[in-house]
Structure formats: C-alpha cells, structure tokens
Length: 480
Image (tube, rainbow, N blue to C red; front, top):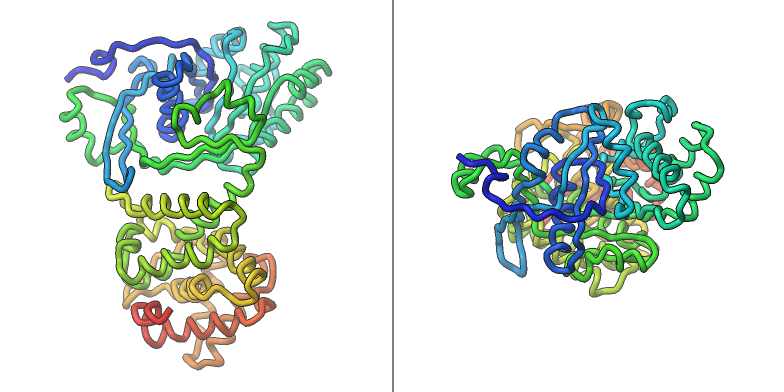
C-alpha cells in the first residue's frame, strides 16, 4: 500500500502562518481554511507548525510531507454528506525540543504574518519558571515570547514586522489573555522597553471563538477507509460539516486573511460576546438541558433524542421558545444558528452519547442554562417551563437510577455526596421533596446564589420533580 505523500503532487506556498499545535482540531479547522483560501482566493500561504509539547507528532507530519486527508461528515444543505480531500497547507513541522534554532529562525521570515494556536485551554498560562535562555521554554507563551523577541531584534524593531494573533483556545478573551502573559514575561525577563512598545503598537491580538465538532482519527474504521482511498494516512482526521470562526478585531484583518471571501463561515466582528453567548446558550445549553430529560426518557445519544417525536419536540421548543427570546442578536442570526445546531445534533456520522454530556452537569447547568432561566423571568415575569423542567429532571438524574439500572454519575465528590445524602434521606412525601429541592437550590457553592430566592422556582421545580417521580419521565415530559 502506498503512502499519502507518494500519491499527491504537493504545491508549496509561502510560509505566512506560524501555527502552535498539530492536533486534530486545528488541522481540520484552520489548516483546512488556509487550504480553501489557497484554492479560491489566491492566499498563497502555508503554515509552519510548531510542536508545543514534547512528543513525536511532528515526526509523523514531516514523514507525510505535511499532507493528510480530511473527512467532513454531517448535514449540508439538508442532506447527509461525507466528503474528503487532501489538505496541503502545512509546509513543515518543527520540534522545539530537538530543533530550537530552526524554531527561532522562523522569526526571521519577513513574509510570516499570522500566529495561530490551539494548545488547549491550559495552554495560555503564565509560567514564571520560564527563562529567555531556556531551549525551549516549557510553556507556549514562553516559547512565543522568546520568538517574538528574536524577531524584534533581528528586524531592529521594524514596525511592519508585527504579527496578527488568532488564538483558538476555548477561553474567554483568548487574544487579550495571551498578550497579557507575553508582556508579563517580558517584564520578568527584563526585556527592554522598546520591545514592550513594539508588542503593544505593532502587533494585533484578536479574540476569537471557534466551533466545529472533530471526532478525530477514525480508528474503528480506518482499515475500510484506507482500502477505499488506496493509500495509508496516519494523520487522517474526521470533522463535522459545520464550522464557525468569530474573530474580534480590526476590520482590516479580513483583507489579509480573506476567509469570508472564500465562502467560509468566518465572521469579523467588533465584539464577539453575543456570539459566544449564542453558542453557550443555544448549542451548549440545549445539550445540557436535554441530557437528563432524554436520558431518563430512555434515549442514549443526542441524535436519538432529537429524532424522537416527544423529546425532539421538547428540545426544539426549548431552543426556539425559551432560549432564543433571551438573546440579543437578530432573529435571523439566532434562527439560522439554531437550525444549524439541530442539524448537527442529527449528524448520522457521529454518536454523541448523552452520558458523555452528563459530566459535571451541575456546573454546566449554572453556566449554560441558568442564565437563560433568569433572563427569561426578567423579560417576561414568569419562568420558562421547559428549562425549569430540565432542572427538575437533573435533580432526578442525580438520584442515580434509570429504570432500575444504576447511573454512573460523574461530578465532583462534594456534589455526588450531596445528592447521595439528599436522596437517601428522602421519605417519599411532598414535604420531603420540597426540603430536597430547597437544599439543591440553596447549594450556593455551585450556583453562586441561592436559587430559592428566585420567585416561584422552588415550587415549580418541586411540582415537576414530583410528576417525574410519580408518573415517570415519559409521561411527565408529554405534559410539558
């Protein structure tokens, strides 16, 4: 069997992107976009990939000449589609642990314009043990600061040699946070004031929001795929059709990074806060609110839940009648995103298990669902019944039983212990249920407020929880 590099005549482009991270997500998201811009907008750029951790993944990338196959599977224009292509936008990879000099040398390239990263949420972190003399520094910001200083010195502080930073880490204000750490390291290392001025005045740090589900390497079906392709690819990756990249920064950035012109779902905005809120409330909020309802109803995956007549209607109505009315974007933007979310939930190529969503559900409910409940009440002077029903279902879920089968609850030890104690002491009476609900809503450590103070919430949750316990989830959710 041939290797992928033996089956593809690669075209080489100017190295314009310095990319920290070589994982499945960034290759199926950023590098795919660069590939699309090369095909349609003459971007004529490639990414040189920097390995942020000490492993051998860059070796695999270089062995395949930077090439890999990307499968995009999911709902596209209302149809289930699976399509694949070879991505050729990576020029090479550099391991900073074995070739630090080559890493610094990339800073000397005048054509290099973008720094893009995906080093996990923990990657953008300040490490005071890092030093300029280290080869390499342990943290991603440490390595990056050393490279920036090398570029600053090499070009004599040239104002035109700054970068545009597009971090993809899933933390709020990721660009601002990265800049803050770089400046902090510059101070720790006693670098000259001119370097700090160059960072502040000649580099652009954008905050971004990324969205695409990437299952990754399909190890369970790779033999069949390899036979169909006719070549071996150790870096093959699967992603969903849907993608969204919201970039908060100056509008001129899109002239240099023409992703929107390449018909990619990339938005250049002045403030990404509404888009982050939209994603958290609609996509993540729908996941979290559906989980206990659908699981106790007897469903195991998101797709099963959405396609069921009863739970599907519950999820649809929750999104459109209770979550969307609390958000600030235009009706079209919200409805289009909601429809895309429902299409993603129905993706026949992905088995997204409800139990995987259940991890740390209490804290997830606080950040993803509770804000919609509170905003809905503030706006309409009443509680959203489906979201409140979901909270009741969550309390029932933490009883740890589905039709006589024990549920493998996964949360912090204190939360698990709280529910275990509450359900063990429940005496089966209405008063006992009211006491149980009062204790859960008063769990300030999780909610950061006493939810018993929310008008009618305790009574409504108790009513729904009583219905679930007496009638069962299948009957209780129908009444909603």
